[in-house]
Image (cartoon, rainbow, N blue to C red; front, side, top):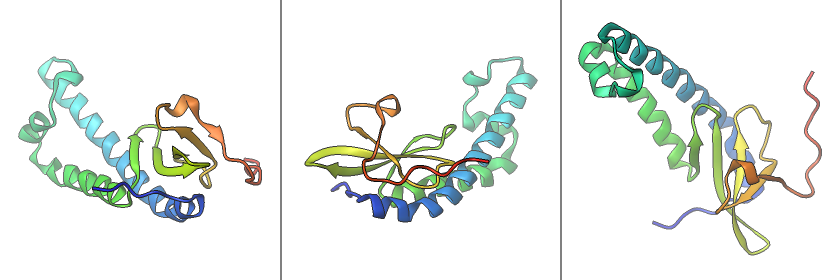
Amino acid sequence: MRTRSFTVEQADACVPRLRLLLERVQRNALRLHREREAVAMGRGGDPGAIRIEDVLAERPELRRLVEELDAAVGEIEELGVELKDVDLGLVDFPAVIDGVEVYLCWQFGEDRVRFFHRRTEGFAGRRALRGLPPAPEVQ
């Protein structure tokens, strides 16, 4: 499968949809995390050792939550972007800048795509895109 390549404008056009989807993913992931902790506490175990299947076996009503979470992640992936971190809301858009394959980088809460990083780097390597107006002041 060929990877889609985004322009900054195309990536920015995806931000409103991504914002809605990521909000849903984060909300459902947090609830699932809390349910996993509750199951672990009931068993006297480590939440990290509790599989989702274990949670669903004890609380089958959560299956719909897992399905909603999977559907939202699927919608994000269908856009052609890469969801890098659910908790931080990091999304990368494959792109080419000056002939170099990069990722345009957007984080939940940002108004638009303002950063990029080389494909071999991660979030720590992100740099500001040239030629963009400054980010608005947060009041």
